[in-house]
Image 1 (tube, rainbow, N blue to C red):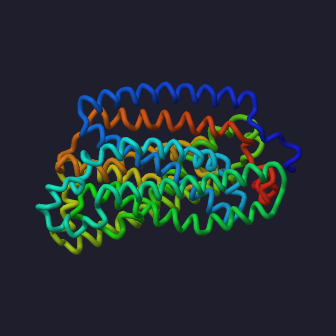
Image 2 (tube, rainbow, N blue to C red):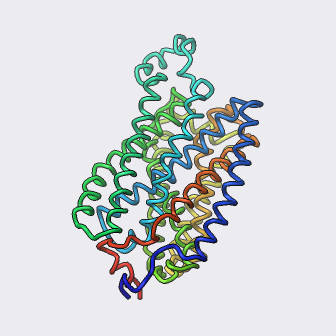
Length: 398
């Protein structure tokens, strides 16, 4: 099978499906955001808290997909061709992600103690950290992260579109040259993003492993999302003629590796903090291992590691489209729980509670983000037409 034998444009049937999914996602998103608007008026503090953790999750899907795209440009291989167009579409949602940051910026006084001069004046620790933790510098760093992510996405997507028009090795070289430093920047920016947007909710606590947790989480959740999209596309042309069980096996192995990496980072942080048993460090875990939060922690141990790890060891499962999709969707849901567990206990004073806004915010943001993603996905052929690994990808597993 060669590339000219197939039409990689979105088929009429698939276009109809995508429009249907997009319409439903948009309706759900608008209703969710309308509910969030009511929450903003009725419970502003809770609105900003719920919005923050939901927003951090969707940032991970977009930025994590861009990271996979850059890794594919650097390494090549059939697995990368399969996920390239969904990853590009997810990366093109970064302008929307940037726009959705506005409520986080507006909610700084509701979210972060260090933004209040009176509190900082009475706290020596916050005074020591005030050079870094202050509102202008916080906003400037967010603009840097989001601006650079948008720039990298713009360049990679522009050159990819040009590559569809003609096979030019110089374009591939450009994408690889940007992807190297781009991946380095992604790693550092995600680390500092985690420090800024999540860790500084409790400015008296710190962890050098915290950024790695978010790097692993973004990689895991975005790969699970890309697998889910691949399987959904596999039931219609053109991807029905492209994808084989071996493609799914490859990305399934990456999913298994990331489950283990996330567990390694999570346990390493816990072990170091718990063994040190220092009052200024251990309180963060005490808040998450009592008051009802211990049950959420147990769910994460079982659902974020033990269950997917045991299932993904199976070669047959990784080659089964529907079963692998089920595991991927489960990982996306459980990662929602993980982000919630990382953010919410610092606001709830160690007592487990769920607000109706904790459902409205992720539903609203998710509906809008997914509708925009599906619109982007439909705009280009679902396989990169002149990718140097395209021939290998079409023959992969046949």
